[in-house]
Length: 325
Figure 1 (tube, rainbow, N blue to C red):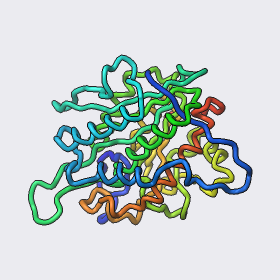
Figure 2 (figure 1 turned 90 degrees about the vertical axis):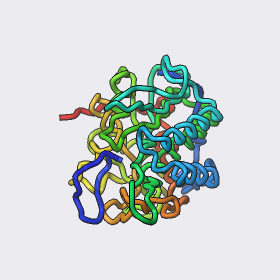
Figure 3 (figure 1 turned 180 degrees about the vertical axis):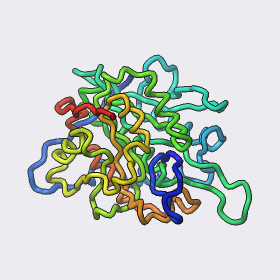
């Protein structure tokens, strides 16, 4: 998440935190409630989370050996899934340099069918914070919830949509770097796109804890800025899972995660989250470790995103564009 001034003494309340292959639609269901649990493997999701948030990654700070290890893990997963390279790239890395630091987004694509020149982006940031340079005890900012949880979602959704193979639109899966330094990775990505071809942005951040809205719920930033959230709500009817508007409007979270970089270009790009940020004791702390997350919450949220976005992925619904004033 993007670094912000400290809003609370204990908890910082913020987010700063072109081509292809194949994806998904949900089989039709009756109106009665159906389970979200059959399409994703909880053990695999746990493996992704615990690997990305391990001490071996040393906090995944941009420009460090730890983020290199994280990038390699994501690349290997994209390769196993069968994602294609983006645009003119010759690997999954989108390399660039900023602040004299060599950086790279990790990008893979599933090509669409009838609307392959229309893109939906599914994203999260894979960077976090540097280790404490001195002191006793735990000095590693593992960044499990922020944002290994979101990256886990990106990988899981890539596999899900690839296996489904029914997407009409192309899906661009991106793990952004340097979000914690000011959304640098997503801003760089945004500079190189034709925003008119991007119909939606689905950003995942802090999705591993039960929110204040209760079990089987998530919340969405910028809910009133497009009809994206209403489309998700409609698709989730009958699942027992609910999506709510951001319950923290005064903190302006819509602009504090990577969705903002595309939203400023007019793309209806929003961030999903579940974490009760007003009471989370682990945000930007060394205590943000995988063991503090609920893997079942993480799994259910990823599944809900898959179902909720299905009509956008499959070309049926197109969210209204965003106007930033």
